[in-house]
Image 1 (cartoon, helix red, strand yellow):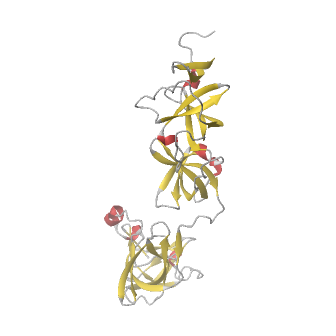
Image 2: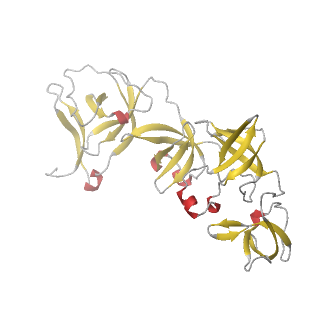
Image 3: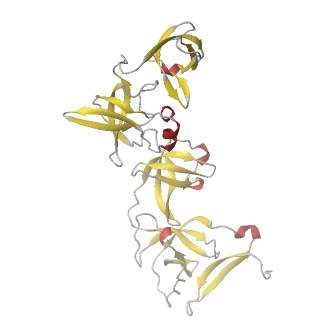
Length: 348
């Protein structure tokens, strides 16, 4: 027996003569089930129906349209908004459409979501790479435009096993006026390609460093440029300038301003932006640098210290700074090096 203020679930239809809304199939539910929008797994179809009276017009602040839908001999007019129409779909009055039944969070009434014409060509899928993951959502770097797009965990069947850097395919939909990724599916590794890298080797001189730790505190903090490094090179009779990022050097050791390097040019497919990549030294004479000589005092797996007669304290170094990665350093080995300032600390 229903009582006043009992929470209920119901279907909404309209009186064919008066056009007034009518609740049908009323069922009592628990109070916990009242919150949130419920999206049905059922995909339904709507089509033109002969109406004895037109459906009532929607309120000004709610849906932009309604879908005529028949179920168990009853005619329903389900509301939908512009954001419920799938990307790229165009609706016309009288179209047969497919949609998902949902329960409106505000009113508890049935409404249509993910609406698209029944006979329209499938919407083109997009591709990208997962660039951020949280507990219940993430972001994808799109391969078609320079932009990241949000997605909810419910849009990926195996979200918990998804990893950063994975190639994925998805559809784009509007939700609350914002684009979101839906229907996310994994792709084989290497499917998504953001840029094309040329094979021609060019030579130039480093004029600005990409490694922010070597730029100096204030400059490093203020820089928001994703490609802060710069190389000047000559092409024909023109002197050109090209940028590069922290991951573009081919070598593990740190580049210095004034280094003579060789590189290739990578071109982003999305916006045509070019940058230098696969950068490595071509001149190891270090004519533009002040070189010092010292003796290895201590060496560990990834770092060590050098004693230098010209300095009172030992100088820290990383083993990745070795120009020849095949060389094994030992204590008492004599070495030559360049001194650099790294975040207010001297190292080589």
